[in-house]
Image (cartoon, rainbow, N blue to C red; front, side, top):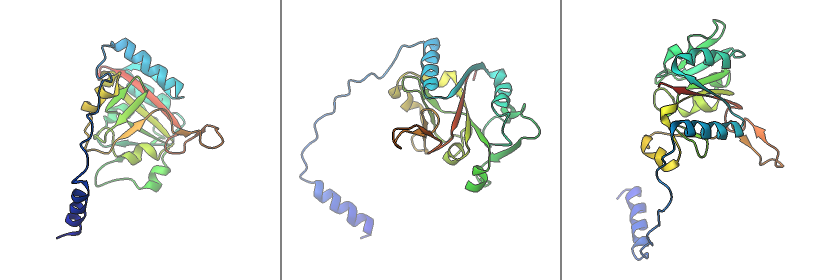
Length: 210
């Protein structure tokens, strides 16, 4: 018997006479009829309240707006599955780095990179939460957590109102990153400190037509 089998056996034995758990009532809202315009307005309101920068644009405007957000950057990283055309308007002086399986940037390299550009899986308007689930256009968690500036593409078609609407859209076996505004904490003497657990600056481009 392996150590794993022994541990699991002890757990089963300890739970053998456990009482049957009461059924959990699930009467919370699971769906919403909120229209696209209302979803955009609600998500923008939440993100602005979190001190994120927000623009609502058309797909053709992505390169223009990405370049505008990164005028002060000297380097940018993006995941291998992201549309490289979205970075086509960046100045020639901005180094572009691709993070890909088998060619991952080190933490030191990410720390020395000014910004990151990713897409996103789904966004929850009611809580102002953007969720990344590691798809190729979002990349691994480290690239969206280490650089100081995150430019996140949010397809308007991926916005839902409620969390129960978001969960079925996620690949639950992938590592996920849930973002509600720039990284910040108020634990230290109740003073807001930004950049503690991730980027200090979050710019969200909410895009029609993706």
